Image 1 (tube, rainbow, N blue to C red):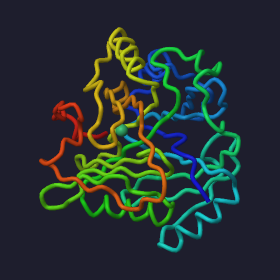
Image 2 (cartoon, helix red, strand yellow; image 1 turned 30 degrees about the horizontal axis):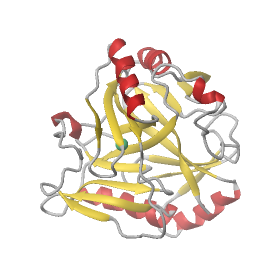
Image 3 (tube, rainbow, N blue to C red; image 1 turned 180 degrees about the vertical axis):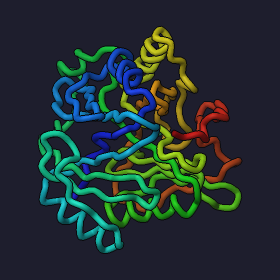
Image 4 (cartoon, rainbow, N blue to C red; image 1 turned 120 degrees about the vertical axis):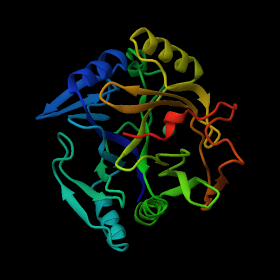
Length: 300
Ligand SMILES: [Fe+2]
């Protein structure tokens, strides 16, 4: 029983036409389906499934999905979640051409969907045709999602469900002087984080949705592409103190923050204990000394 990774997210956007224009013309995704007020977009010409669903009205994340290898694994997760009193629901409408999925809510109210994706490519080859067909910013894949929480207890409760219900590991926890969680980074597999948590203003659901880019050269080209299209970065490029991945962040039309992420470290072996770091003793934001922007505590 194992999860693949984050495979799609559904984001609410304030203006779906503007958001669509940005995600297609600038980010380089392509539209693959429309269902009512939802538009399904993909960054991979060889993958028939969407990595992003835009839905009209509001901001933030409505739902996100983790891939599983087969439908039979849903039963295992169903009983594992039931054992910690998390209610689950079988769904048949979570994604186009998707017969069955398993949905549940995190203690923060975020909807998580477990989606069988046996046909997902085993890995994405950097030299494939898909890589050469990228345009715009041209991310290789959806990378991770960092959800918003308002209270310490919420973040601890989410971590409990992820670890006990789904088998996630906690890689890092960032606490304030009172040992209250300010941020945490959790992983489904070997990547340092698949689901992050950052403390934001009450009412926010999303801190950022991250897309995979290749390296620092790709960050530079992406920043040039974004700037030429009139979309400045909020901060970056840089390297995070926690996790160590390369980052660039921007607020996108539609009202949500995206990250471009490269060089996500792997954590190998069976290491259950997270690293706990204290604010003021460690620059979690930047390994290179950049200050965290004031705007960074705001989510959507
Ligand atoms: Fe991130």
